[in-house]
Image (tube, rainbow, N blue to C red; front, side, top):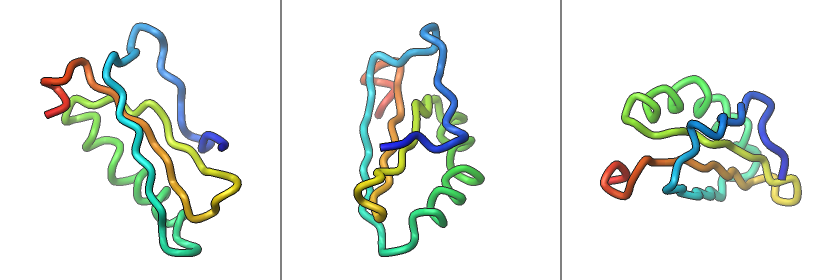
Length: 79
């Protein structure tokens, strides 16, 4: 897997003890569309809700797969 170019690693001070791995299988040829929407519409709303976007990845072996990770300060914050 390759991280997307705009996925900026977080410093250790911002590390999240609770991490959620999310994997989406997309319709063929739609991954770049999802990534564009994710970058422009989704990240900010997730961060505003208290989540940390840890990273997003393109699976080079599966062109219809999108993987991302988000972090939380606690299990209560994840609810």
